[in-house]
Length: 103
Image (cartoon, rainbow, N blue to C red; front, side, top):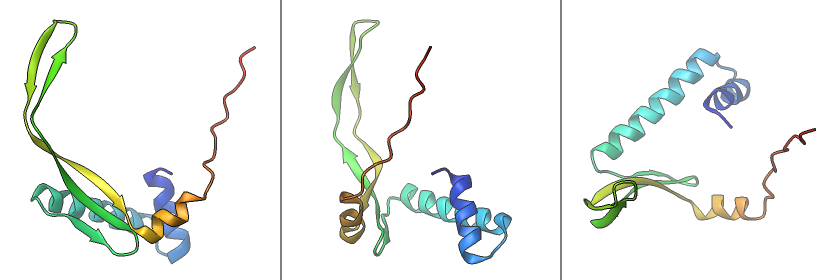
């Protein structure tokens, strides 16, 4: 599902205009990004949590130059689904993408 599809679905289910739904989705994403940028997690009960995970310093390699570099410790955003949400998704079979046979 894309953001445009999400906006269309929200518009259909709530009866609000697509423009307003898009502004709402954009505002939600902006707030989540801003909150996480400030070092805080975002908890949406029944859906899941947007959390920051700490990655330790490690050694990396640039294969083309055959050199070793130090990758500093850093935070990355992650999503942890709520148990009820995860349980609903566990038994759902994923839709497989159809690959066109070449002639």
